[in-house]
Image (cartoon, rainbow, N blue to C red; front, side):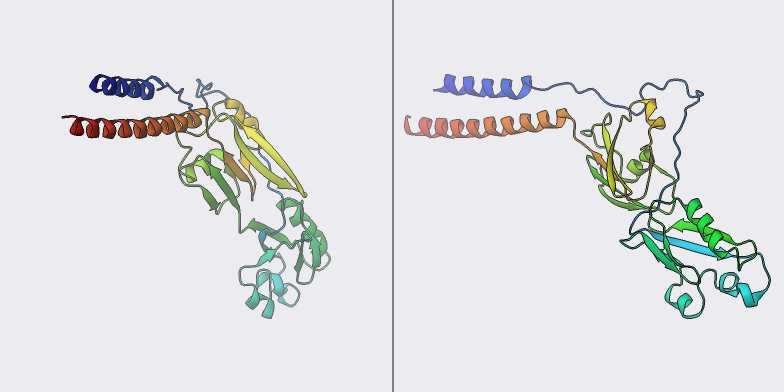
Length: 258
């Protein structure tokens, strides 16, 4: 009985140890060696989407306060409108529209900030001298999910956010995350698109998904190593449970056979 117990213990240790595998470490931009090389980087201006919160400030070069005080003095909203909207924030509704004083309803979904600024200037050029329009996103955010240290929604004060910066804000990809196929889920003009980026290759700088847009969702999937590691742990637990039972039986057997 004692020899059988030793044999079972040896087999259990052999099973749990022989399945240990070496995992290749994935590094960022592995194929980039020359730090002085030129890299073409895709830069795109974010487009306005539903539920975006836009900060719009309008100024005029004119000093005639009777005409331009709405914009020069109140920077976008006057009187009660200024009290109700102190941050000049305009929420893009489900129709993709906003409503502004003295301008009315504007269809803004799908436009870039510069395109919207040009449209507002066109609306005001008849009554304002050299109108100046400044637009910013107030709720530029991305969602980061999967194998990162701190998944969640990140709201940032900038509008030029790269995928590497977003992952750094989430505590970086864990040791089980797959850097070769990070997915970016993006919605534009009512259509959802999925982009896949290999962070180990310098070609990621050329991808239209390297620079993130507001409301993008990053999905970092687990590598096969994590699944294998989980399977090894499950087998080890099962073997440990069996060994515990066998050991208990052997102890009881030895007690009653003395």
